[in-house]
Length: 248
Image (cartoon, rainbow, N blue to C red):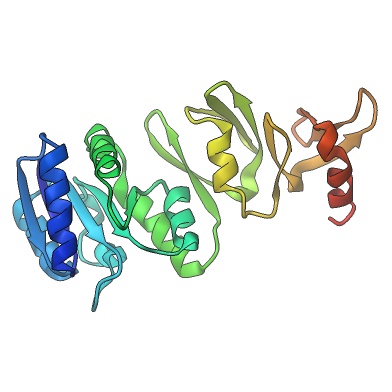
């Protein structure tokens, strides 16, 4: 593999190069750039398979790469390196964009590279970056990126009715269809934790409060969703849930 490192800090570039050479034998060539524009020029000239791109750089942020490379030319993977805030990290995860937090660690770099190799040519990175850019610019989250068999599906929060655990998979019911995703429910619980319309009444369910049809007292109490799905409520959450829905 050919890799380009774009970071305005020489020490950060040297550290990342050392970590790559010591832990990633599939990488045969490493090229460095000190800012986004020189990095873009190298990308066009060298045609790398992988780009490590720092976000916080003078003149142009790494997130501005969409302004300088045509969408059709994204035939490489990007791993952002950042010391960004919690808000931005959530935006990365919701958009399924890969990132590494500084200070960098060898195992994290290796894992990110192996994932990039697996996804090469199939991750639709340009669509992910468009969604990430929109999310960060709007200062609010609107969609989540779902990894499906043929790529990435971006689904608005307002279209998701509920998520149900299915072993190491998650069934996601939207207003149009049911999607089976190869990630456990806890993955989505973490991502949607700060989205106020989502609530976890039971360890096996995460629901969108906007789609509650009825609370049924019989059989110990359960929630009936707009799509007819019955959702259990844990005993220790029943009282809090009733207080919550009374405020909606």
